Image (tube, one colour):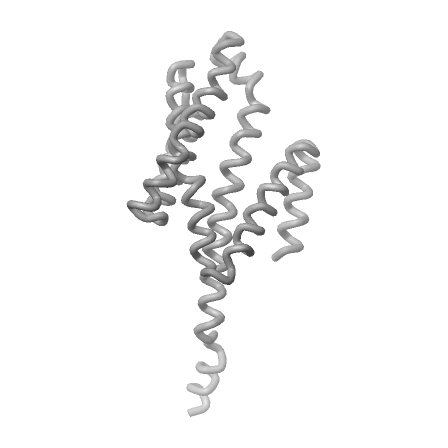
Length: 183
C-alpha cells in the first residue's frame, strides 16, 4: 500500500504533463525560427569564403542570397495557404525536412550551379516552414495564450537580431546567457 502512495505522489498531474508538452512544442518552434534567422547571418558571414571556394563572380555571389530570398518571398503565401489546407504540423515537418536537406546539399555543393539550386530549394523550405512555425505556435496556446506565443517568437527574433548586431562571439554569449537565465 505504501509503495502505491509513493508512486502516485511521484507522478505529475495532467496539468503538469500538458504544460511540459506545451513547453517542448514551444522550444521546437522557437528553435526552428532561430534556425531560419541564423541561416541568413551565416551565409552573409560566409560569402567571402564561398566566393573564393567556388570562384564566383560578384554577380554570382549576389545570386547566393537572391536565390534564397526570391523563392522564400515568392512562395511564402503559398506555404501559408498549404499549411491551412494540408495541416500546419504536416507542413512544419515538411518545411523543416526540406530546409535541412537543402542545407546539407549547400554544404556539399561542388559547383556554383549546385549551390544556387540548393539555396533556392532552401528558400522553398523556409517558405513552408516560416508560416507554419508562427501559426503552429499561436494555435498551440489557444485563444488566451496566442499573444504570449507571438511575444516569445518576437523575443526570439529580437535576441537573434541583437546577437547578429553585437557580433559573433559576443552575440552568441548573450544568447547563451539569456536562454540559460530563462530556463
